[in-house]
Image (cartoon, rainbow, N blue to C red; front, side, top):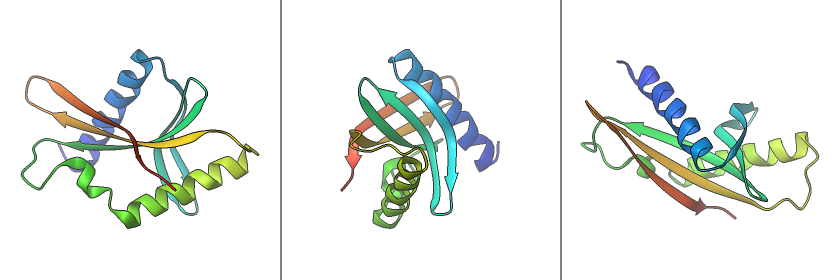
Length: 118
């Protein structure tokens, strides 16, 4: 399985996981000129922008470590585009990271709520 297939499988698992938790999925793979947000969802009254990082092992570090300051800024700017495009004002928002670990016979998840933001 190549890295694109791994990422797609992780994102599909993330959508199912969030749905089971009661999140309402608004859009996946939202793209703007500033970048991409993997999942935009609603958790109660909060709009959540979720970055999904999928790995088969931690040999090269934990998945969330890949969401460095530069990546965070891209996600924040893309979230601002989403809010502006939909004319959403004064909406509570947060940024989550979902680490998905694909193992031979199972999938594990680490949901980091409110991982970063301004």
